[in-house]
Length: 321
Image (cartoon, rainbow, N blue to C red; front, side, top):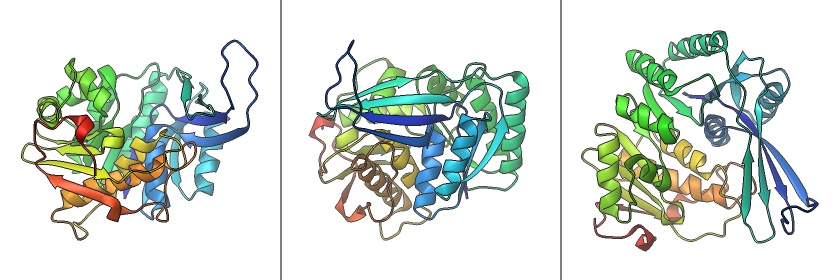
C-alpha cells in the first residue's frame, strides 16, 4: 500500500473558453471538476491502475466532503481530519489555442489542534507499514516545512520510505534535512533550489546530487522526458511525441507511476522500470483533459526509451526519444 498526504487539498475547476479576454465577460464552453492537490492526484492515478492506496488530507464539511465523495466514486480510499477553514478551489482556464491560465486560492488557515490531529492520523497510518508515504503539494497557512521533516523522521522510524513532491523554500528545507528517500522536482523547481539555470544533463545531475546526496531525485523535464539521479545512478527516459491536451497534474501521475513499480518488470533494473513507468504515466496524463489521470488503456510503456548515463554535455532541449 502507498499512503499519500495532501496538507493543502483542493478542488480543481477547469474552464474552457474560445478566447480569454482580460477585462471582458468570458463565456465558458465546458467545465470540469476534480478532487485535487498533488498527493490526492497521486492516489487517484495509483488507484486507477489497480494499486492499493489511501489519501490522507484535512477536510472541511463542504468542499472536503465533496472531495471524499468524488474519490469514493473513483475507487480511491480517503482518510481525513476535520478543519474549520474551507478547502481551496484552483481555477484553470484553457483557451482555444491550448494556453492555460491558473488562479489558485491560498487554502485555509490551520490551527495547532488541526495540525496535531493530522499528525496523529498519519502516525496511525504509518503503523500499517505502507511501502511509501508520499507528502505532496503546497502547505496551508499555519503549517511549515518542519511538519514534513518531522513526518519524514516518523516514517523512517517505522521503516517506511518517504517521498516528497513540493517546491520553493519548503522543498529546500525538507531536502536539506536529508529525510526524503525521494524528491520529484521539475526542472524549474530544481533551478530555483540551486539558483542557476540548468542547461545540460551534467548540470541537472550535479544539482540533484547537491540537493539530495543520498536519495533518489526524479527530475521531470516536460516533453524532454525525465532524469533519475542517485549517488551512483543516472538514467534518462523519454516518450515518443504525443498530442497534448492538458499538462495539469501530469507530474503527479509520473510520480505515481514511479512509486507503483516493485520489480524490474522486464527492464534491466527496478530503477529502469520505475523511470520508464513514470514517463509513460506522465505522458499519458498530458493527452487527457483537465486533471484526468490515466488508466491502463491510456498508457503505452513500449513507447518509452531509457538510456543509461546520458552524455553530460547533452542539452536538455536535445533530449528526445
